[in-house]
Image (cartoon, rainbow, N blue to C red; front, side, top):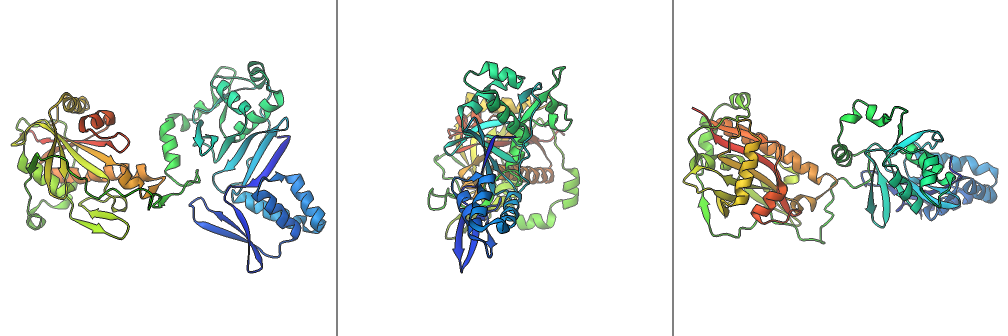
Amino acid sequence: MSETSILSFLPGISLEQQNQEWVLHYQTTTHSKNTISLPNSSQGTLKAWQVMCKDGDTREQLSSLVQETDGLSNLAEFYYYLAQFERLGLICQTIYADGTPIAKVVPLVPAPPLPIGDVAAEGSYVLSRFAYLHRQNSQIVLESPLSKVQLVILDWRGGAILAELNQPCSYSQLCQKISGISANAVQQFLNLLDAAKMLSEVKIEGEIAEDKQEYLVQWEFHDLLFHSKVRSGRHRQPVGRTYRFLDKIPQLPAIKSQVTDSIIPLYRPEIEALKKNDLPFTRVLEERKSIRHYGKEAISDRQLGEFLYRSLRVRNILKTETEELSNRPYPSAGACYELEVYTAINCCDNIPSGLYHYNPQEHQLFLVSPRTSQVEALLEEAAQNNPERQTPQILIILAARFPRITWYYESIAYAGILKNVGAVFQTMYLVATSLDLAPCAIGCGNADLFAAAVGTDYYAESSVGEFALCSKQS
């Protein structure tokens, strides 16, 4: 166990007196504000909480403060509330080694206190492949999707140990490799990493214990990190529609402005007539499938126009005091509709080959560029995803104007984009099936290549989904 452990409240927690009663203010993991009433709290207990709202102190010193102020009678009250605060995940634990703080344990969710034991002195260990360092505000933080705590690295010794744990090491080997570090500091830090599930033991035969877990070994680092960060339960970030940039950054308009005069109007089908005469929904749903064998005849401009109109047009614009939203045939998170539609046209009757942007409000195609080498590369990459290496007649590229959704949502914005892409895919599949066309979603695309071809900033607008649309074989 650590030689010294300082307990303090999470940043942002405050103690205030309201109507002659003391109240502790804190935020939950969903960032809703909450309070804990502390009725009839003794002076000693209140002093302890005030200390913990600042720099904190050891458990022993806090209990001594209560005892010196109130006597033994109120220690039970202090320990009762301390246990409740720990259970709610409101208490940080700063670990010392050789009289210097080495790391702070910050709970991310309500959970029992982190049990810190002793790793075996003769054992060999390696850093978990899921652990990662990053800067958070002015601190260096170690996190892992396997852990429900984060470790704030407070001392160079922690960083030095982490750098050496890229390969199996025992704590005695670490002491030899890192000059100026004590065996005690290494032991304390390894204990902490192990308790936080950021350390994995290496067996005698060289097998890493973490890699022997059947379900865990099948996760890639980025997938598990993404999963843990866009779902509640393993982080403290605000989640949902927080409007965090309201009054700070102007909101992007619902419809992207056009910068070209080269416009192609598209055919508009009669929706009311389609409601009466279109194929039955169940038949369309049952016949929907990916078709990777394309017809010899090019898709027509009329077919493309009807497909885009039925799948992706803007029905109307909705304006409020703070935002501009829209309504379209497919669902979108919060009606943000951040997805933009581009068509890389290989062959289509009456429309020259090139890259176009679809204006869903005017139902028009705007020429972005002729068939350049970059457009050719986009089509070629789509062909590589086809077993027959056939180039699609129409490559539909879904790009996200990221600020359209990140302006509203926190933590879940990119997850929302991917869900929206799925909703668009299904809508396009059903419409293509109804039109007797050959649709096929494509598994991956090159976002850098797209941004270069269109001339957008990769971080402001880049591709997030690709879809091939062609005529069917006779």
